[in-house]
Image (cartoon, rainbow, N blue to C red; front, side, top):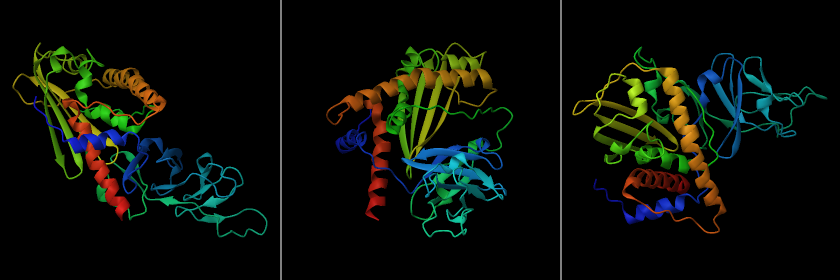
Length: 330
């Protein structure tokens, strides 16, 4: 494995953990579409801003600032009325998808000019909900490509889930783009001693960064054995993960006979879902949250050591920093 990482890129990646700057003109995933039934309301925080996402009567998705301008009650605690308005739970003010108050049930019913909240472009795509947080026109062509979720073939299974981790998102992206940790933190489940030595290839397509790891002639890890119970004792293991700016990732992993090309096979959704969740929630999350506590406790800017395996995290941070700088320059 021979990987070179530029010194400037390494310096940029070290600074980024201390940065509170976000890329705003981009799509952020707000949740899964099936979390939002007709008339459903979902409250969450994106880029430190309270956002409420709700489904209108015609099935479309809207997103507003989740803070009534009257007494700052969360609109997400309210309900959808008339198919397209959301009502504040506190005093009944009603807002349309543009964020303008359209009904004041009190006094002379006059609507003050300040009775409005910020509106965000929102779309439903690839079975997920997406919100555009910037002030530039929303570009739907930039919704991250998760078309693999659409029209899933019979031989594929998919389970839509959610895990909460109390840490900076960069630590989570670092964790996922550096898949060498699977041989240690997830030993026996996602990796083992045979997968430590892997060929690493990093490619970039526009602003998407893909990291591939190919372990040849290795014992299949536990999850792969579950997916292919009759697998041979030695296999090739391929893992590919793509980062799409600013914060979404798509992972593909599998095994095949030594020297063959990996192909899809029948999966066992519940067992695989539980094992995958255990790996992320019980193994990844405690380490990532511990990292965050150590960083927070430091009285100076952190300066992480960079290894050859960090080529993926270094590359994505370089791309993200350029995108943020270009956005701020505008």
